[in-house]
Figure 1 (tube, rainbow, N blue to C red):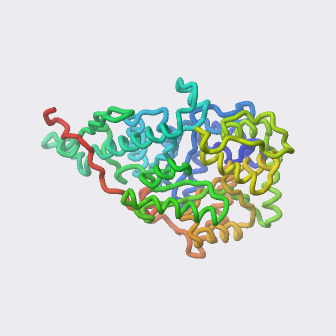
Figure 2: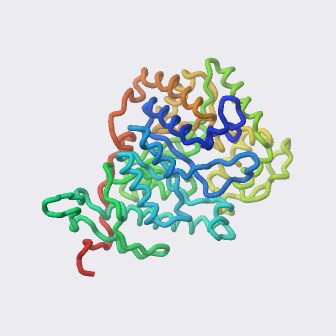
Figure 3: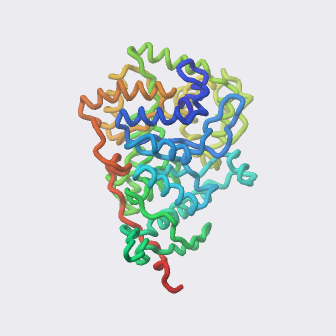
Length: 436
């Protein structure tokens, strides 16, 4: 996220604010991740300028375009882009991600989101956020169509035989002929299968509908869990949903997000965290909080507690995030000021301040307790916060035999240790060129 995941990162002296507009900054971040042998970089995205452009805008570059530039400057690290099922079409999205997968040599991943923001809805002609259940019905069909399009070219379909003048084997290229509630798509996709078969599917929603979508399709799940107990409950819940879709825990990696503040001593790390908290703009943070609950909270007193707010069942936007924020405020009896400070870095994800050894100990404890398969590292500032993790925490994990010392695979599926799924035959397609 720009120059760091903390909402005030662009104001801190450890960042260069103009890096937000510099593609070379993002290339450097990717190269640092690759230096640390990390699985992937992951670009969040929204389809609106943000709640208060005077203070901050969370996303400037369109992720797929940016990752195409990064692909040429890296060799190993995976490239995951967020893209919405709410305001795009399956054909154009499938083609764009297939192109990135080819450009990167099989390193692409799609973070599936349904877009829960009111400003996003208005940018596409809606006067309200589409109903939550409707968004997820559309998302289910959207993903089905994308998978069919990615599978409309069989393995070995591209022949390139000059002597016989055969570009592709029509027996291995099929239409999709999908007709559903939301989409009608003939196919095939005009992009053949990539080196990893198809991009990795990633999902980040933790509502009931989001967890069902993850259980059916996701190979990687990003989630916000604040304790080992919460993490274990989430893992058990998601694993319990897999059998109905013929899947097992080996088919999916669950990665809670963490925001690490790293320093030589714990007190220095805590002081660094406070520096960022002190830079939070209350008017920006209150608008973000308003977006979470779908009500105007900009007039709240910072020294009061949260008022009574709509229950998750009455929220059509960020259902799971609203529950997480409400539970955090209630469990710790936080004032609005304290709550905004806790959300400024992680937006509900867990912040941790400590030495490299303490960070490494914490990560290992979560994995050993069955609360995570790995982690989505969300540095509060970039590139320095990622460099600190890569140069000081990763070597500890490597010495303890808990993380790779070099890349062992060439694709994103390989990095995650997840076998690329078998092809999903087009449901009603026919060979291209065959009589209709």
